[in-house]
Structures are given as structure tokens and as C-alpha cells.
Length: 175
Ligand code: NI
Image (cartoon, rainbow, N blue to C red; front, side, top):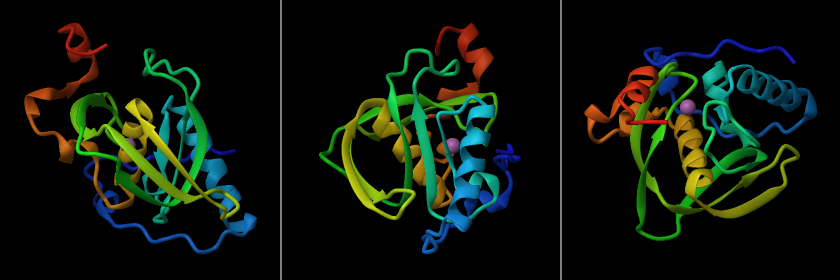
């Protein structure tokens, strides 16, 4: 399971809109999923989207048992989500700090839908759906944004709420 390099913010490829996946053959999908999990885990992430490793298809993976980067975060089941669709369940929004493997060392405060229903296909092409809230809902919205070329800094409403992780922690604004 080779770790891949991660495109960093500033690389225009990250703003591409990725294509729906249509080839669910193991020969196509298994190496991609292996690389996504390996890259995410090597960097201590809790989610990663295919375009972050230069594969412009609508595939994300995420999951969290315990994270050094997010020690307070509740567990999220290990999930492969392909061709996702997200619907907010109501109007409620909530702000939370986010980071991204494509924006290393930084965090920003981002408003997201508090409760969502998401659906998509699993690694075999089987449809599934979930209703989630809290951190799980935030992670799904963050990862799926990558498929439309959107990174979290583009969603920060107040850029004073954005900065280097160590500075934010030193100032006790985060962590
Ligand atoms: Ni990200």
C-alpha cells in the first residue's frame, strides 16, 4: 500500500471538478482505495479525497477511531463513499475548526450544515445512505467539497479565524 504525494493548496489541479466514477472493477478501484487509505493514515488524516492524490474521480474515504490530530473527536466508521450526494436535513449550521492534508499545518473556522443525509456507492458499487450530525457531518462535507474543487479556506467567513496550528494552539484559540 504505497503512500502517494498529496497536492497542496495553490496547485490549480485541486480546483478541478472531478468526474463520477463508472468503473467499479477491482482492478481500477482497489489500488486507488489502497493508496487513499495508505496516504491518509501515513499523514494522520481522518479523510482524503481522490483529487488530493491527483485522481480526479468522485471518491472519498474517511474514518476515525482515535486521531492524534483531533483527540476530542468522536469515532466515525471507516467508509468508502463514491459519487456522493449530500442533502442538509434542516437549516441549522455550526462552526468548527478544520484542517486538510492539502493545507498542512493550518486550521480554519468553517460553517457547515449541522445535520445531513448523504448517499452514494460503496467500494462494490452498492448504494447506501446515512443521516449524521456533528463531526461526522463536517468530515463528509469537507471531503465531498474536494470533488467540486473547493478547499476549506474558500469557505472561511472570517479570515482572522485562520492560521497556523501551532500559533492557534499557543493562543488557546484551538486545541
Ligand atoms: Ni481536505
